[in-house]
Length: 206
Image 1 (spheres, rainbow, N blue to C red):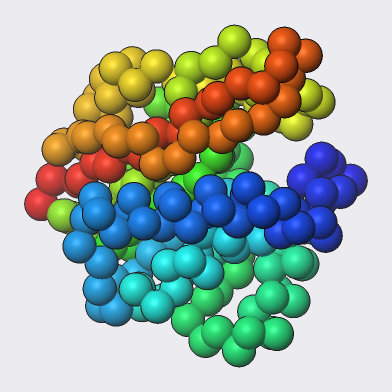
Image 2 (cartoon, rainbow, N blue to C red):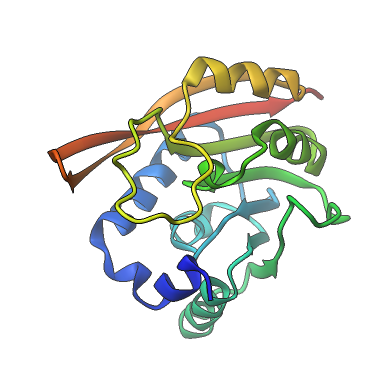
């Protein structure tokens, strides 16, 4: 059982995670026009906090994750809520072939820093989008290694926005913009610190 399988049952009990998802959903709404005609993929969905915040704004949403524990918690939430436009999917794009479906929108929250090859996953996101589709990726600004008190499979200590923009452009994305979606405040060995979470919006050329 990995870190995220173990944390799945109490993930939603953290009010800051719930607030982070809500604020990121608000930032996504401000970044691009959403519609019930849009098909979406959330990659690294966890328990679905972000997708539940966006559920009423979109059409069918595929919620993908590599953690069976997170997907089990998500399935229970879907049953309890009666949401009908969610489709959970166990998917690891670092090793699995691309699904056949293509999407109008792909979004993620605090997922990129767990994926070693950023350029590769950006290229796969680009391939999974329909022409004119959007990528919205929220993650940590570059940090000094104090964000994670315990190892949780992180491959990067956040991202420098300019470097990430360069990689996104090299993957074929255009209209790449950054905003700050949320600021995480947490206790570290050096006291309370603030960790900004950016939202990168990018579009696949029509």
